[in-house]
Image 1: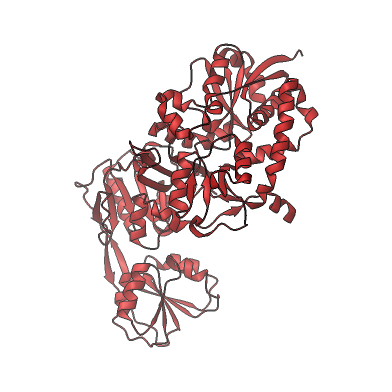
Image 2: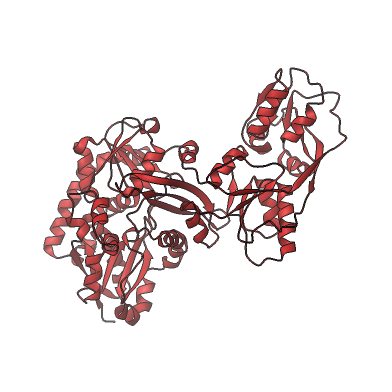
Length: 580
């Protein structure tokens, strides 16, 4: 079969050429004869100002096409048949007559923090001077590494690495996309013979020179750390490559083209939510928006997103910062509303009114009534008692406890109440819920569980491997089903317990509503009830108290630094490679 010529437009940096060569090799394997056409874009030429200032000075669509417009023009004008982009650089508005994107060669999506010296990132980034011209990174660094200084830094990946090595502008750290570093490492390991025929002699010599520059600064990878996407969400589509083609060329050869990129559908399912949120916010790829999607054990997706509005006076002054973690249910609009602080009324289903949160409109729905049971403490008390709620604490207050008994609380509110009621006893909070306590004590520990009749089954299941645990139900929950006249049909719902979940299920069934509700849940017990009845939950809180849960509903950005669990050594770093 005769080879099919295909001209592929690309930016002319080493990273862009390396990415395009991946596509060229794939296409060559299914019968094409690729030729690379390196071009410079506006983003490659305008290097005197920070990227956010340049993008802001241009008309909106031009600012969003800063790294793609020239490649698009080459394809549209038949000077090229296709172009390869980093998907994160593609504007959501695409020119007519171009087909795609076709996704391929997904790499690690996280951002990478490189240190000029030292192996340890100081707490809160104190003393770091970090180079970046990404508004997203500037905003998120201000929330996560609160004591670091950020300075503008432009240039392609190798140029920025060289600037870090020299300490230009006083920088001693750099944030870049890990995917670019990984791709350059892989490209540097290739035999030149495998790709030289795609390039003319001048471009091939440029590749050799740039590879030598990359090798000279690769020592910086000894001090590289990944910023976890949960706490440092990335640009939408980061880590993914995108092939776009002139529509007539694609339709003529589509079977062969798609055969070269079998991973397209898998990648598309993951990056679609990121792209949909970007599109709904209508911000463009240079805005202070980070959104990362990860796959959960059940095959569904979780989203972490961080967003701020820019001050009209200064690009790097941020307003209304928001950070959230949610499960993806196929709808971008609710997440967009949260990021813009435009949530509708949230109905709080529980036993007591929620903490006040000025940013939210919360309506309390009394969903549960509690009744004390005629229970008595065993005559021989163990040294440890787990108290599952404030109601159980008040029941216990009617009893006499030896000072030697240690009380373990299920939540912070319960711990506070126990400390007030039993000042002579040690009160401990080991983390939210019974499971958190069991994870931290020996299985042989003598223990008495105090809680509700409804929680007894779950508690017994959790303590199957703890033979010295006894259980005592001291109250029961009665579900109250509201008539619902005061509940708006488009409201969102916060469910605070398993019994509150039962109340919501009965109310919703009585309403016979076809619209899927937006559900936020405090604790796994409530999530289990809702799942059993076929409801999807967009967020299950890990907060230790209702105050934390309300802050999660409000997308409080200070939770980001409070929840942060630390950086991860870069697996592609020289240090990690040598350790293996």
